[in-house]
Length: 595
Image (cartoon, rainbow, N blue to C red; front, top):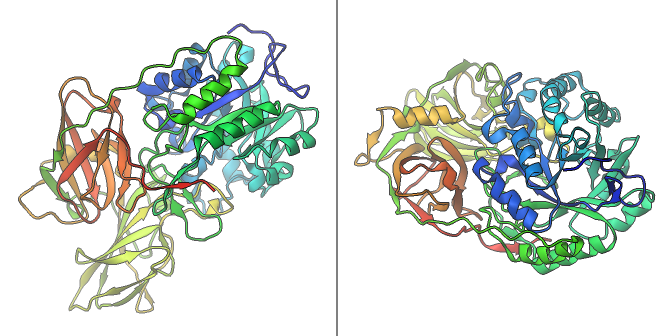
């Protein structure tokens, strides 16, 4: 890319290299797309007429333990930015540290919550010291890819949606300085909804942008900053889905009509999302605005975006390409061909292992300890997955969670299931029995809130006392089950599995082999005879499944499969028919229009 003057905002229109420039942006998150497919997705975006890639940077993946950094493989941000440049895309980087993104804790690492006084997204020293340490690693990696250094990065966003949080007036100036002092030289942006513009901005040459699902935001933005370019940093092409709800869709004709109108008003735009991808693993966020009862996001982040979760073209894509082509003087590149799919033969479960037989780490504690404060992972606590709390009881009666279960607990007495505790069900009757019995609570972290004012309160597991017959329970043995790839692979290779002829016990791990003859192809997993749990392929966590939907299939990308045998492990909470089935198309559930 030839270098002159970078992106400037000195008048009502952006200029790049001294010429008028309109940002036609699209969001694709490298951490939600298998690395082997980065090029495919970016080529498809380029062929649609998008000229700028926008991406968030998830701190919690890049620094999973304090001081331990990962910028390799799936998280090789430098490779992603370089690839965008090779394909002729400019880049707007959104490094956070908070990203929202329907991602666990908005991308903030859960180990921050080990500090009982933590104040996230403020100038609280415990937070700023951690941000400084992360930015010391991140910014020197991306700074050489700025426009001024011959790279594709033309702008960098300062934090994200801070006007909706706004707990500390010193915070945004601190983040701005944290970027500048480490060598960020390109144009700085902020992004807020209309209500947050006055609270989320920061003085000094920073372009204010909006986010919306309509075209009505452009005029007030122009009114507020008349001498600056207008940009909709997040035009929502669809919406996210929550477990227990319906699958959100936004009519293609309506979406494209609004894009057309925004562009007619001489504004720049970024489509959030252009391609959503997948919340692989346990990384989904949760949503709670008007209620203290958060609902977790589903595994799919299809978002009803122009490019589907598996990289398919949609009606939105076709209509959008038609609109964006008018803003290019040259013909758009040819549309790349689609990936082939395969419906594999059903996998029959061959062996199983009870949860109780798989337990490793144990911690003894008088009182319950939330998962972030467990002394695991080099004293960084447990971030995700399940935590099992066990104690001895001497009677039956009424178990009361005191609303201290985060987020959902299966309750067992002597390994027999007796009920569920969650935000709605705070009590559970325990059967009478003689002598000592073991009470077990398997608590799932369903996903931390990613937005709103309650980020500081996102500790998971048991976050306080639970009572049996009005008496707080004591003397717990606590097992951490974060189900990382190492754990799943060790489990697969271990000799402790039971044959399928023995009756399985729940919760448990179920093992089968998927044979792939020839070249692996994309597919979708279906689990109609199962209830709720997690699916692993060759140790990779594909995400959660839950029969209540809306989502009924899990995307299985071909690059994660091998020729020949593949290890399939399903952690299942309550039931199975012993079969894992496949489909060529996703089933994201019954639909509802985005309101």
